[in-house]
Length: 343
Image (cartoon, rainbow, N blue to C red; front, side, top):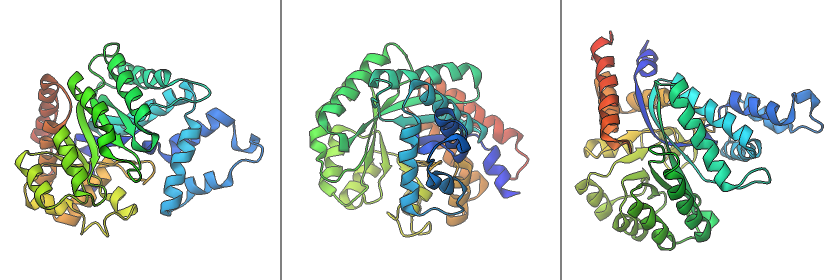
């Protein structure tokens, strides 16, 4: 069966948000962990269970999941469980390399430092319990939270980088861009770059050619989405071989692209632009990396070999060390050598 190939293929995931990657089963487990059994919760939110059991979700309900995710991961214990389950589900989908993004946040139960340390501890421990998957962290700057929090997140990431070596691989810039100016965040991002962190920036999510140029000046190692990058900016990205992180189902469901067929992945592929297929928020949008690759292959008529080569090339785009890239390529090469499906 065609899906068997995508499921068995060793995969590289470079754009996944932690709280958006909580599957329905994980959300249910976290709900029970925090509140107990559903029938024991006084005035429990019926909407929560309707979302988990719904066949199709409206965009409004998709984003309602983020609210539930934040509510259910407001302690070190629940955050630890959530992180562990997310990594396990990626590993179960034969993802061999994973970069998770999350914005450090404080709650009444934990500080930002405790939040980030909890996630890092899980990643370090799971390298032993799940040796088939290599996991890195990209702490996020949420633009909507302002410059002060951005500076705090960069400083905290630099501090913890020495405590948890070789886990924090870079920084992410995300969040609602409207009402903010990229230039305000540039000094914090420059500080991260000076420290040695790579930058994976949500870039070109809306039409603003000047902002994209400003991001290129700072230095973008990977472009998140890049939906509206065109003209001179697209030529710049091509000249400097900057990879695009394409999240097909996320973009279609969020209506930033009209359909799968009209997704900019097709245009980038024709231009031989470096590109990787990602999930973005597999829990929110109820997908998987295997599913995204299947959609991509069917939409753009890609062969098994082309899909395999997408994963092999994605190794180059990871924020991993060179010896780790060698290991990832070896795993992919071994898969191809032993795969029964005709390439």
